[in-house]
Each structure stands twice: as C-alpha cells, then as structure tokens.
Image 1: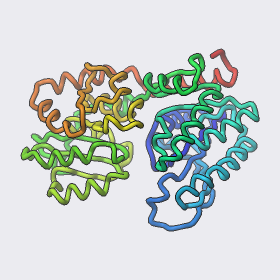
Image 2: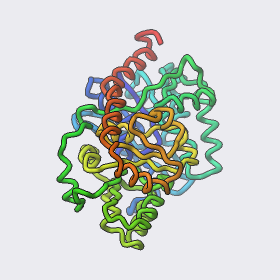
Image 3: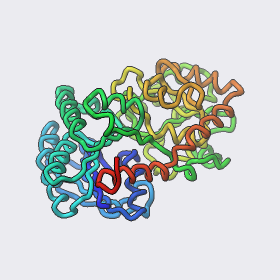
Length: 399
C-alpha cells in the first residue's frame, strides 16, 4: 500500500509517538510511507529566517534505522500566527502534489489544519481517509482564540472521516461525543516492543555515568518537558526533603527545561535533579532500568491530559517499574488500580508517595504486575491490527 500521513508536528524531533511506531513497522513490511509534517519547533531555533523552504528527508527510521519513511516538510512563514496562515497554503499545495505524484491508497491524519485540508482532498479524489487521535489537539494550540477554530475543524473531520481511530477508550468516548460515529470508530492502543523493553539486570552503567549510588532511590521521567508535566513541582518538593538518597532523573527537552535548570541551581540540586537533555530512543530501556520509580505527575486539571495515555507508561511498566501518576481519567480507565500504577492527587504529592513506596516491600510486586499487564500490547500485534484496518478502508475486506 501507498500510505500518506499528515501531521502538525515535527516528525524528526518530536516523539516517538504512535505514528512513528506504526509507520516504521509498516515500512519494514514493504508498504510505502510518506509523511507531510510541520516544523513546530521553529521558534526555538537559533538560526533566524523569515521563511523556510520545502524540505524532503529520505529513508527516515525513527524507531528502526532499516525503515524507509519519506518526510516532506512544506515551507512556512516564520512569524507567529502567520506560520499557521502560511501552513494552510503550503500544506494544501503539498497534499495536492502528493496525491498527484504518490497516488496514495489511503490518507492517515494526526493533525487539525492540514487534517482538514487532507480530508477535503481525499474526498475529492475518492481516497479513504482515516483520522487518528492520540491527543485532543486543539488544547495544544498555543493561541487560545484559535482553539475554538481547531475544535470546530476536528468535529467536522470526525463526522466525515471514513474511519476514526483512538489510542484508548477514554479518547474514544471523547471523539464519539464530538461527532464520530460508533461503527466507524475503533481503538488501537499504545504498545511496546516486548524485546526492546524488558529487564536485563544491567543498570550499573547509567547509574555510574550519573553518579547514582546503589542505595539511591531514582525517580525517572522521559519525554517532552511541558510546563504542565508537574516536574517543576516535583523538583521543588525534592528540595524540601533532607533525604539525599532521593534523586530525580529527567531525560528530555522542552518548554520547562530552563525552569528546571533554574530550580536546580537555585536550590543547589545539581547532584539530585539530573537533567540529561534529549537522548536516543534506543537508550531509553537502559535509563528506565537504572531507575527505581517512574513518574507521570502531570497537572490533573490540564485539559490535554484528560483523555490520553502516553506511550511512555507502557514502556515504564514493561521494564517492571512501578509508576506514580496523577489521577488522570484516561490513565485510570486504562490501567485501573492494581496493574503497577500508583495514583496521587497533585504533582506535589510525588515525593511523599515515592518515599512510602520505596520503604515498602511492594516494589517487586508492582513491577511483576506491571509487566504482565502490558505484555499483551505488542507493537507487532498492533501494527497488524492497523494494517488490517487500512486494508478494510481501501476495500480489501469488510469493516
């Protein structure tokens, strides 16, 4: 199959997310994959330019270097608000170009603006259109007045899409309330690479690199550092405790990185709050294994977090690590109360809960339950399920 994916995020620098996992695996199975993406991180670049030109990145393997995904990045005007205005024109032109040149069998979208453009083009050319939800994206639009427009475009697309897929049951409930029809909507959960994410008994190298002692209790987070991730609150609570064994290891970059550095310096936490920056995805199992407790302490009232289940939770649990998470509805519905996730009410509760958990004799028990729960979510199985839905949408079999 020829599969065209559209999204409004940076395919190369953000993630890996659901779409990266599935695209790489489909590429390895012989499908042709092209992605139209958006340079969402342009504001953070040191290179100053008024506009960017179209770029094409060949043979991209985000998860597996053997994958051959083609990423096309249309140019934009690099001025706030005008970046989105220019996106409408450059992405519309690129979508038309890809339909003419690539002639996709199916279009899969993870966006809002370019999603609507792709939907219109797919309908015009009678190409099956699949709308895939891993987030409630309009909540992430940085300009508040534009969120209503984004929500309206999402609802229109949900009503017109040939298939709607979501990453969990809570998100499925949301899209149904927003206009999707029940018979066209399915859940394909986040997954794990069972072989990549499994305990090996080797954690000493990472701990040695970052001067983590054997009796230290290492709290771990990986991923994009949003301001609402709760990590600043965890770091400030860590500063209040006099237990030098408690360490916070954070792998990733993002909006909150500089604030975390300031907290680290102001409270003299250089040896207790460890900021590694971004690391290759292939190193994540080793980092998780070197930790004792993994974290997802996001603000429970944050709208964008209400209905999602980040992939990192499955990866934490697959490595037999207990997870401390705030009581987010999507996560509670997905994992329940006895599958390796321990819940807190606010990010500030993390340190107290971590100390209690570390001092208990249940760490190993939580880890075993965690691994058992996620083993059924193999990426190979989920990719096969997604592939079958693509075939159904293109008329190869009944939906």
